[in-house]
Image (cartoon, rainbow, N blue to C red; front, side, top):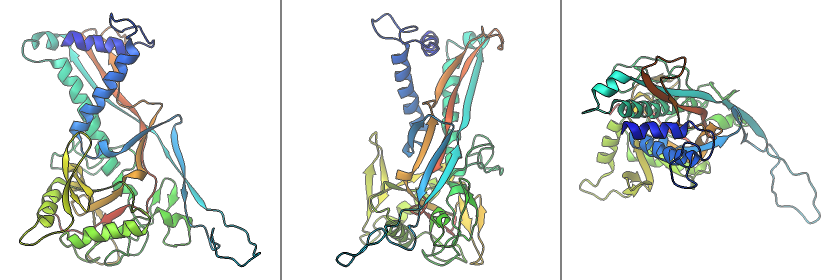
Length: 384
């Protein structure tokens, strides 16, 4: 196994198409690297829940820059008109957003003594390499959901002892907010004038920055309440009203919350319309409500928004939210295809100790939410 692993690393270390390949004609390192990339992605998808559902696209620049279409102003683009009537069409208005890419790497190394001494019962190099890849995936999912929240957590769920990841990009916890005033039901917001991608959210519906606000749903804005079927339905309704009816959507919640949802929507002496099971890519079946997949991630246990006053909210590290996400507008942009790329480091490198073998995986990129008004936060929930 060690020999095979070293051969793969040699293949990945070449810059030509045929060097470092095997003895078959026309089969070289480039083709081997594509196969290893596929295996890396399959391995990562088994270790995390939300990350595999995020679209991954490539860009050839250090920042993702895009335009968010906003209100077209007072004059409509279309109108009924009298015969011979004239007028000037109103162009769309746009808000330019940007997010800079970051570099993430996950390292491993094993001494030659450990490799030799454990070879009869333990493949140390292979295990350490796989562990580094697993850590990369977990860290990436943690950053996508919880962002750069540096608060300490004492449950042992995360691998770094923090809610988020220091130095990470902004995650769903920071991006999914609203500057609309608090209200009961599905018409309010969080009264939070925070920024997203360089622009400050606005509570003025005629401002371009108003489009940076997400939709919010609760039972009451001044007290925590259990999740209800009405909450799930209201989230779907406000998403539909905002034009997200045909979007590829998922509910995202914690593992414990998923247990509560399963009990909530299953028939219990009566018929509950809307519950079903749907299949993800790869044949995995998940619970669904009205054909919208319900996905659980352990990291949603730290996604909380609560209020006991009905006027101000607290963003907390507890399990008080369920998200309805428009996944058509949530994605990860990697730079020039550098995505979980493996870089081997041999002991012969001058900067390394002579009897150490290892390497690292690296990803250059940025996680983005590129449309906000079709994202929904069900908040002020009782902890499950």
